[in-house]
Length: 411
Image (cartoon, rainbow, N blue to C red; front, side, top):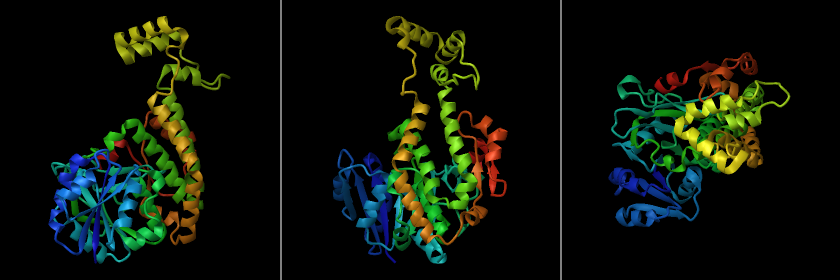
């Protein structure tokens, strides 16, 4: 069985010494190939990589396809029956490909073998297993924990999804499911794929011996927090819409969409100027903060210097100074996520229809194996999740686990 290792790089040429160098043991193997996808890198690093590592097959896209689209380009160029994905900022441990192949061979119902990611120094977990929330966000459970403190899953243990930075998938299963959702661009494409595979009666299983070291967020940091946040929020909505069956939609939909809207209002309230503009003009909510309270907040948040800057701006610009602008990060993040979701909602609906035509396992059965998590993550979540209104929106008879953020990250 031939394996194709696919590495996608956009702005990580400086990491290729680690990722491609760690694959040098496969240079002379006829049953393993390495495909590098140069995803519109500014320095055309794929050309240099092909010269430095002549056993690497490099393909290039002239536009940034995101991680999801980049993997598709690599799959199109690959010849293997098994596709092994490795992040460009990760280094494969000894025998990584073999461990994935052994895992798939031992588990014929498995479409995906989920490897582990460790911190670069090998002392902490980066990805050991994942969890999915009721609104389709995902957590790397135990991320940052000392390796000795959290046991990895047993070989062949069922997982809801595998991390796209270190997984292996059978080509046939990839093609049947349509692979990663290209519209997701980056983030949660692995969650979407795992959900779709389980719905089709295929499995995702742990391969604890397939280990790679990872420079955590080294590549994604280039996107910036706001852009990453937009992808997180948009992609979670899209994953829920494209994957949930009718019963799951009915059970969780009210809580999913109400939580998205609640976060938007919570983010607006983080700035006194926006809170004033967004306040209910008919007295249905709390009164807008007074001028004195707004100045107190500015002093608490910006100190004397920040307050002085605001006062100077008011003197120079008049009342326009301090008016809300759409550079206000979290609110803008949520608005962009909503716009992105609706821009692609018809394509998401088509993916849902295609999945339902092929589905053999209902979501209730999937969630019996992988209960959805309720985890306060953003400002305002603690109060919202503890409210009677939110709890009334959650289904009573579906598997749910309520956890704290510190518990999830350290569990």
